[in-house]
Amino acid sequence: MTLATAAPLPAAVRHDHRRPAPAVEGVCLDVDGTLVDYASSMRAGLRALLGTDDAWADWCAVSERHYPRFTSGQIDFETMRRQRTKEFFAIRGEVLDEGEVVAREQRRMTAVQRAWQLFDDALPCLRSLRARGLALAAVTNAAGEYQRCKLRALGLDAAFDVLVISDEVGVAKPDPGIFHAACTALGVRMARAVHVGDRLDLDAEGARAAGLHGVWLDRTRCGIAGRSPGVPVISQLRELPALVSQLHGGGG
Ligand SMILES: [Mg+2]
Image 1 (cartoon, rainbow, N blue to C red):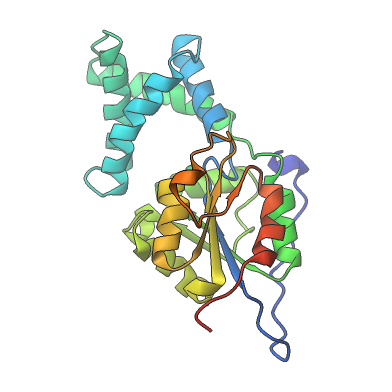
Image 2: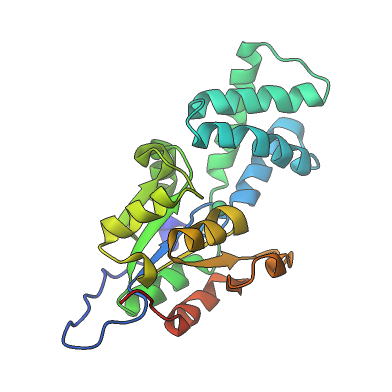
């Protein structure tokens, strides 16, 4: 679904304080792989370079080495992208000079951005959470302007009360600081907040360690949930609103 077909999301519904407080008052959502079909867009980037995305697993392995160097602040986003592309091709036996690295990275990113799209269940989930009066935050490990551009392109720039981007707050998931920053900005206590994301370690377990309800979105149903007892698992975002209603608030 794209901006052109996305109906406006309703504003947050304020809680009536004459009634008992709900168990959960705020929901934080990861962006890439959770709301946005990250893998499809990145595969499109590979096809622009290679004519095929057969090397997807290799790209993921290289990304796993380079992306944390950006989120931890060791290098900036542009440097990470160049070094990642350079290593990806070096592993394939092709040594690129800097000019060729920049050219290929530009070609890849153009294809990636053209392929940005939301998962079909993203907007229905956000609307349902809004209809339940929940405050919403996006919590994402990414470069600030790049991620804001993506959310604008997909019609999500006004979908959240709060947008927390690691590059802008100086701390990345799974560090508790980024979850605390989101809850503080939402005005919601950690025990009354949920965070959902597609990474068990960075999203669900990180949020749980920070004092939120951590929910793992296992879209691929890879079934490693047993490693983390106490973390609820869903396979689609459409399951999230009902799960949020069942969670208990802690800490008063
Ligand atoms: Mg993600």
